[in-house]
Amino acid sequence: ANTKTDKNDCLLKICELLENKIDYYNWVGFYFRNGKKEELILGPYVGEPTDHTIIPFGKGICGQVAVSNKNFVVPDVAAQDNYIACSITVKAEIVVPIFVNGENIGQIDIDSNTPDPFTEEDERFLEFVCSKVAEIL
Ligand code: SME
Image 1 (tube, rainbow, N blue to C red):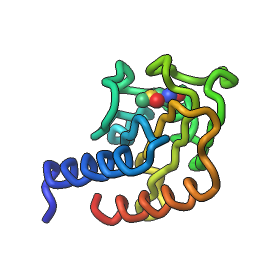
Image 2 (tube, rainbow, N blue to C red; image 1 turned 180 degrees about the horizontal axis):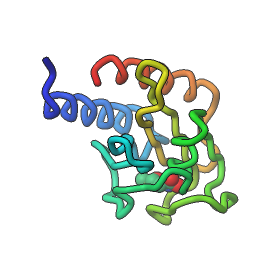
Image 3 (spheres, rainbow, N blue to C red; image 1 turned 120 degrees about the horizontal axis):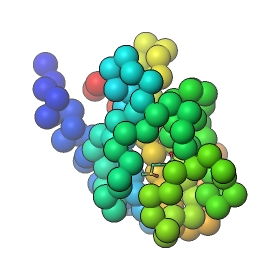
């Protein structure tokens, strides 16, 4: 069986690969539901350290995706009022939920320093990544 360490190594490698290969992916990380609590907890990530290691459901882009179960593409973070800023360099964000047995158990979160960089191709690609991640959790 996969241990927690194996899984986290694998998730970190995915973050590194995405951040390295796609130039407008500047912070890449995973948040997961914290047991039965209505909050997200930060998992493996690459990029600047963030203070936001715990995010309540409903708060920020991530917290909204925990509730909506839908992708959230933000072309301009400055235009969002329910947004948690992690770095002043960030211009845009995409969050895609991870489903295991139909349940939203977490998400991939990507910040970009480029304005409005994310397309439907990113959404389809990240949905695929999340479906693969779901298989190893
Ligand atoms: N911007 C996110 C918070 C997480 S950081 O991007 C790492 C949000 O509004 O939920």
